[in-house]
Length: 128
Image 1 (cartoon, helix red, strand yellow):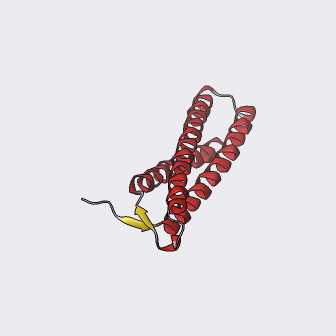
Image 2: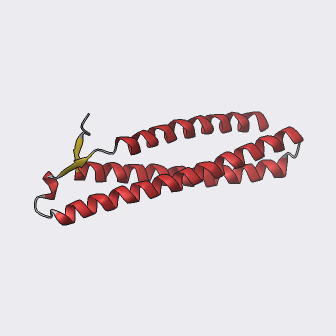
Image 3: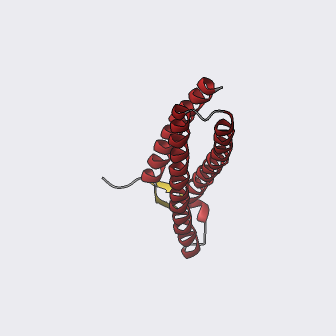
């Protein structure tokens, strides 16, 4: 099956959206880590500490995934830029292969991250 094609400007806009979503998640994770520090200060029971460690590990891993996704997006942006440079006439009408794999990775990240946030919020409700 031949890959679908999209306009360069469509892909660029989607990349910008992805970068914004990832930046928001990274900022949110900083806030969550601060909340964990507050919990450790207020409650040092073993079961709470185990959950704190679990969430710390999850947030570290999500930050790593965010960095990996940003790297892939930057690589895709460089590809778009090189296509636009090589064919700098009417770039608004240029197409390239769609980045379905990158989009699927973002959907998966958002789903898993959303589940983690729900789990963390439930933990906060039980802890406080």
